[in-house]
Length: 206
Image (cartoon, rainbow, N blue to C red; front, side, top):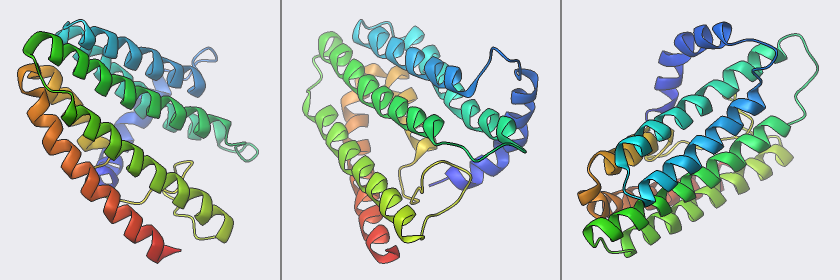
């Protein structure tokens, strides 16, 4: 919901960071790899009820995810058109991280607090619908020339639950793991509403 405005607000800071880390051995794909590794490590920490390290690793993975795109665009200036490999690697890493972190929190919260599994399963189900709808739209929009160009590799339809909200919610259930199931219940509902909106908006746009 706030992603467009936040990307504009954070762009100068992210560009400044990418200028500082723009060394040959720092590549967009390696930042995406850091995103994946930190996200998986966060999931393991959450599953073993190490909530503070899990939160730190989660925020690190989100920072890496926020930097790989600006660095890729910086490197692409004046070069040939991007092959799409970086964007593909990025979205695959994000999907793995989102699924793993939800699962990790579910395992940890169930073991530590007897939390029910159902809210976390509903979150994963909502993620499945949400991800499928925007990937289908992006593919068909590209084929029909109706893609939405906001600087990212894929055409993202806006919604109630986007990247910023995901960072906040995943952080909240690591900060308050005893309430993780309640947070997951609300989050599953919001993501489902967002997915429904994307399906309708995508259908109309095509």
